[in-house]
Image 1 (cartoon, rainbow, N blue to C red):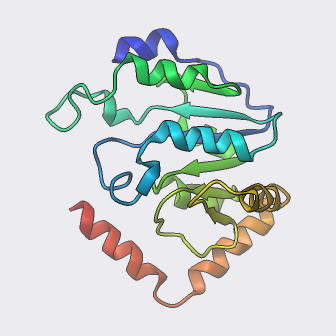
Image 2 (image 1 turned 120 degrees about the vertical axis):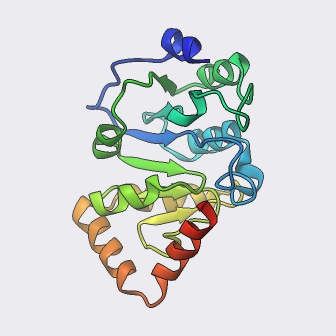
Length: 193
């Protein structure tokens, strides 16, 4: 699988365009099943992103680094067809593993995830987030959770795109003031141990 991404993955993304960063989740793992519900199918999530963002935006997709390490949990989980299906989608680019994830977050217009930690990495940087499953930052005003594909999702995403970096940071700070939000994080950590 590593050779597939070496050949297919784009090594120099354009950081000067508006884009959504969607890092793929390690699978199998609880962040996609059960937390992702129907969006355990990550290609479906990428399709939904394309449907609700402006046509001139691009979706950058990057593989989870652990997915490329062979072990009993992910042996043959993704094959070449999975990556080819992503690459066939209009306005979607599959990135090479060498592309820096932190820079992808910092330069993105929007970050999307099923239920991953990238949400809590993006919000304090002032980047709004779309989630498809349960997230530890649910309830933040700069985050929109997508359960089904409806017109209201387009409206919500457009609202997120209008927010300034300062507004997103302020929303995240307000979210952190809410009582008991950290208990969700503590429970999340305990599930991973």
